Image 1: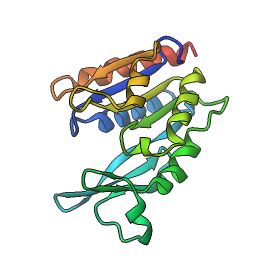
Image 2 (image 1 turned 45 degrees about the horizontal axis):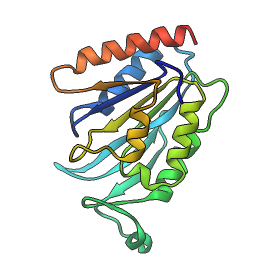
Image 3 (image 1 turned 60 degrees about the vertical axis):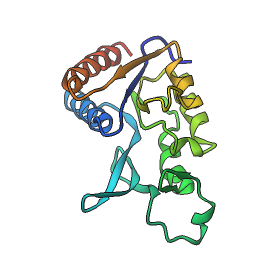
Image 4 (image 1 turned 90 degrees about the horizontal axis):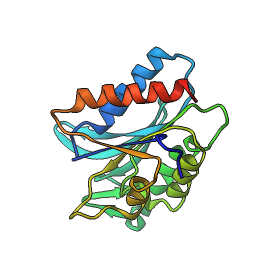
Amino acid sequence: MAAPGKCFLVTGPPGVGKTTLIIRVLDALRHSNPTLKVQGFYSREIREGAERVGFEVVTLDGRKAPLASTKISSLESHKWPTVGRYKVDISSFESIALPELQVKEDTDLFIIDEVGKMELFSSSFFPAVLRVLESNIPLLASVPVPKSGRDIPGVARLKNDPGATIYTLNTSNRDAMKEQIYSNLVNLLQNH
């Protein structure tokens, strides 16, 4: 359980700009506090022309690994879980994401983009997220909107955490949300 006000969850429909918002907040925080120690990752689309063919995980220091793809040639891929038309490469995801979620005493902030269906296929991922939540280190994460009115159980657990504040993003409030989340994190980090 996170301490009150220490878990910031950004949600909204696909393509609304959750990842962009998180990166902009992180850039602003690093600009105002260059010594800030941040751990985590974000997910980014892989495109071929106009077509989205997959996703990759990118650490905050720039390392990358595949998360999911429509163009998998691995012999192992028939065993991989599927989300829509994407095959999820759990071992690749875990190899880069899990080390980023190791709780260290000098960490000021965790970024997790995203806690979603693909990531939750990893049996090790959600326990690592819970350890981050329990560490009392501030967390900025994105979560998907519920499908058919029902959240994924792990997402529901995060959203129901007493320390969670949920920011619902849409195309008209993105800039205001960025400023609000940034201000709240600055205040929190100054008192951390």
